[in-house]
Image (cartoon, rainbow, N blue to C red; front, side, top):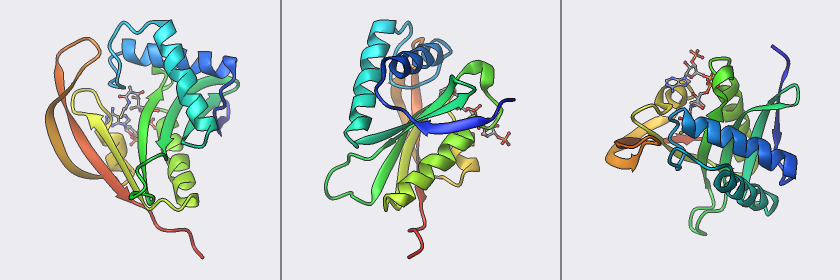
Length: 176
Ligand SMILES: CC(C)(COP(=O)(O)OP(=O)(O)OC[C@H]1O[C@@H](n2cnc3c(N)ncnc32)[C@H](O)[C@@H]1OP(=O)(O)O)[C@@H](O)C(=O)NCCC(=O)NCCS
């Protein structure tokens, strides 16, 4: 496998298109990432443009995992939270292209998101993942603690309700 490069995504047209294509493919494959199938390219592109523009404003970090120059995976570190939660960040929109799953791409993205959160002084990460077809095993492998479950939380992309599992992880503050 070529070297995996993890880097932050800027709102360039090429990266917006690549991210939108990954999102459409993930939703079509049943991934619970807030959208219903079929997700139009236009809607996905609009969402990804807004997400990368928010990243450019420093409200979030959108990471991309590249194999050669191909976007194989992504994760978002949401930083813009209410002013009484400056120590917290959220993990969202974790996706690996189906053909590249099981090779440690999501793990590499998660490690880098944790490193960047720590660098920014965040000491608590929070996320939720669907019970049906979500990624609970991935997060538990990385030390996230299950806080609970909410039944019937969201529709799956092809329809039918699924519950969600809530997770948190405490991060060590950076060494002084
Ligand atoms: C979840 C997802 C991002 C994992 O991507 P990936 O690149 O294949 O993950 P990795 O190869 O880094 O997996 C790391 C470990 O987590 C485990 N893991 C990954 N996905 C898992 C899942 N859905 N359930 C249970 N364990 C999982 C793997 O078995 C692996 O363990 P190992 O190191 O012992 O082999 C990918 O399956 C995906 O895009 N799913 C659809 C979108 C989605 O549901 N995202 C989660 C939203 S919260």
